[in-house]
Image (cartoon, rainbow, N blue to C red; front, top):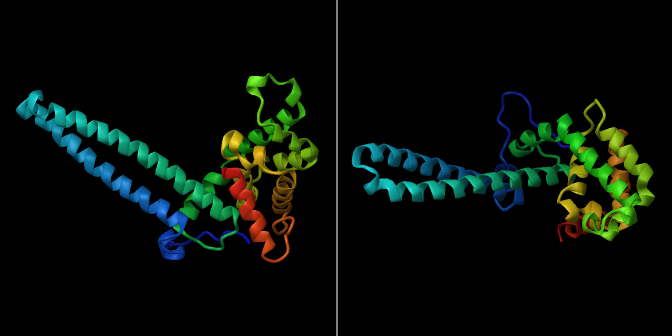
Length: 237
C-alpha cells in the first residue's frame, strides 16, 4: 500500500494529530520542536550577552556568554540528532506502507527519491555485494561481518534493485524506503547481519515495488507483520 502525501492548500496533519502523541514519529517530532525552541531562546540569550559585553565589559558577562555558547552548541547538536531521528521514523513509516498523509512523511518523500540519495543507497548495496564476493580477499581489518557472505547467493536480485533504484526515473518511494532501512546503520545494518532468507524477502519486496507490483513476497496472515518486525529488530541489535 503506497504512502499518500497530502497535496493542495490544506495543511497536512502532523504525526501527533494523525497517529497519536505516543507514536514514535510523533514523539521524535515533538522532541525536535522542543529542542528547536530551546535553541532559539538560547540564541537570544547569547545575542543579549554579546550586546552586554559592549555595555558592561567582558568581566561581568564574559562567563555568562561562554556558558550560553556552550549550551547553544549542545542544543544545536541535539536539534540535528532529533531531525535525523524524525527522518528515520518517517522512512520506517513509509517502508511499512503507512497509508497516511502527514507533514513529516510529506517532507521526507522528496528526500528519499532524490537522485543523489538513491545513488548513495544503490552504491551501498553494491559495495556490500562486492564485499560478499571478495570477503576472503579483503584485509582482515576492512572485512565486514562474516554474515555479509549471505549476499553472494542474492547477486541477481541485488543487481536488479541497484538498476531500478539508481535509474533516471524516480522509483516508488516505498521501494526506496525499504532499501534505505535495509542498508541503514553501517555494518550493523540488516543487510549485513540479517539472515539470508530475511534479506531475500526484503529484496523481493523491493523488486516487486520497482516493477509496479504489490510488496513482494508475502507471509500469510499475522506472520507477515511478525516477520517484518523481527527483521527490523534484528537489524537494530
